[in-house]
View 1 (tube, rainbow, N blue to C red):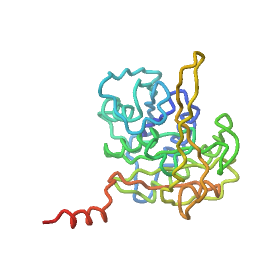
View 2: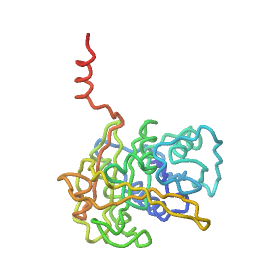
View 3: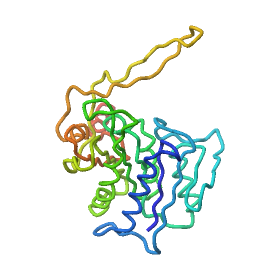
View 4: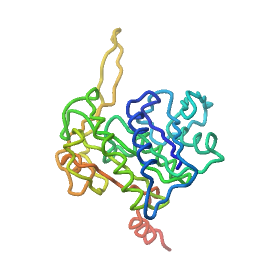
Length: 273
C-alpha cells in the first residue's frame, strides 16, 4: 500500500507528524470491502511545503520554479503550494509507482463551512482526486470559539491521533466516487470526549465572519489584516458546524463538480429561443 502525504502548514508542522502516524496505522490495518489497497508492502511518502501555505486554496505555481529538497528517504520539502506538492509527488517522485491514497493534513485548525474554499489542506486532497487517487483531507479544530477553548498552542492532537486511522479506514471501506473529496474534521476536545462520527453536509456561517482590521506601523503608515470571527449564531442540523459543537468528528463528502444543476435548467429556459 502506497500513501502520499501533504499539508498546507509546512514540512515542520506537528500535524504532519500526526498524519504520518495515522497513515502507518491505515497501512498496517489495510482496507476491506469496496476499497482494496495495492500489493507490494507499505510505502509512505511525504511531500509538504517548505513554508506555511495556509489559505492558498487550490493555487498552482506557474510563474516560479519549484525547488524540491530531499530531506530523507521518503520525505521531501517543496517551495510551493499543497497543489504543487501533490503534483510533484504523483507525477515526479512516484511517477512510476501506483499510489493508493492521498492524505492531506492534519491541519492546525478546522476546515468547516466556507473554509473549504480557502483551505490549502483541502486543495491538496482535491488535486489528488483530480489526478485519479482517492484523497482525504483531515483537520484538527481548536480555538476560543463556540466549539472549544484554548488557542493554537493548545491543539488537542491526541484527538486526531487516536481517531484518525479508524475514520480513514471506515471511509475507505464505505467507498467514495472518483470525483469526491472527503473532508474530515476532529473536534477540539480530548480523544476520550469525542461523541462519535457524523456524516455531515457543508455548513454556512453568518455573513459577518470576515472583517478588515486596520492598524498603524511604527511610522504611522496604515496596514491591514484580514480577520475572521468563528462564532456562529445559528448552526443548521446535519452540518459540519453542528458536529463540532457536539464534539463529534465530521465527515463531509465534497464534489469536484461545482455546477448547480437546478440553476442550469432555469438558465436554459431563460436563454432559450
